[in-house]
Length: 455
Figure 1 (cartoon, rainbow, N blue to C red):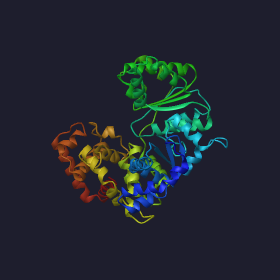
Figure 2 (cartoon, one colour):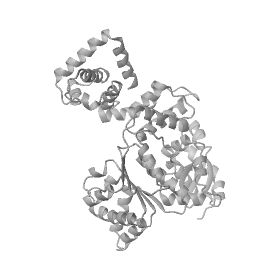
Figure 3 (spheres, one colour):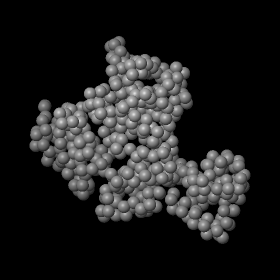
């Protein structure tokens, strides 16, 4: 059956009633579902307009499957739902001659995530080189290819999607494509298993026609010889034709395992940039930006911001998920514009903290605790973990041992594993020494109390 927008609107009340039957909390239904606006149709996608990013995130993470089921059950159809904010709708109105549907088709063709933009990417010392390099692509192809590496969750995916979206905004007729390594691998394997022997050539043609090719997490090509061979051909063709290639990985190109030297050599030809670990100040800055757009008016004092940032310093994606949990908890349990205390955060993230217990045996990674103490004393964590006997390093090491023992009740033998397997008696001696000092040193006592508070 063919559906137009008006026909769906006529059934919209029935659809919402169907959804409501499956949501126990009426307040949740009214706050998140009842006010979304049926905006437009784009093929088999229904475009909904939502009030803000927080509502969009909550719906997408918690109710998307329920909503799609209610729609398709009511209409006997197979629609998918897309939720956009007003800003996102405006972003894809490329010019007065292009309508919304054409913009969304362009987005779908590029396979990018429209939430990832340069405008909502927080730039600081740890990521500014990668950000600046991708911005220059809009005007200058000098650095090609660009290879970005970082640990998980530090913004590589955001940047790759952002340059794809920005490039389309500047050059709407170009062919931009973002793919994860998993998508690329599955596509190649499917073609290889096809009875049509020309399928692989069609795949190559598809990627060789792309003006801007963005491939995320290329390290997963490791140990896949056939994938590497096909990618090598695509890569060489596109670079020769002056087309833009941007790649990301969780490690530098020269540390990629089971990649041919000829491929690593190609990567070396371009620009290689590392996104380093952010400082606490940078993470707080990112957190404040996300609260501004997704905080629903709740007030986050400085000590709360530091508490959240310290526990999520190594993974911005995890930081965002933590914030969503906190705001969702506050939305359902606190008055509007409430102050979010550390205790509120602990209650809201109880399940996540339990997951940390399952991962580490504690509700925070002990490595993070050691790092924060080292930062406070401005001493390299590697030195604190070393055999160095310098007084300032030794004192910091002893405080780390004390905190791990007293805060986490960590076994002495386990503490030793964090400090080059120091023996049981050394750990006991260090803990006892700090315990005696604290009795007469008020500043050290307050310092350790603040550590306890922040972790």
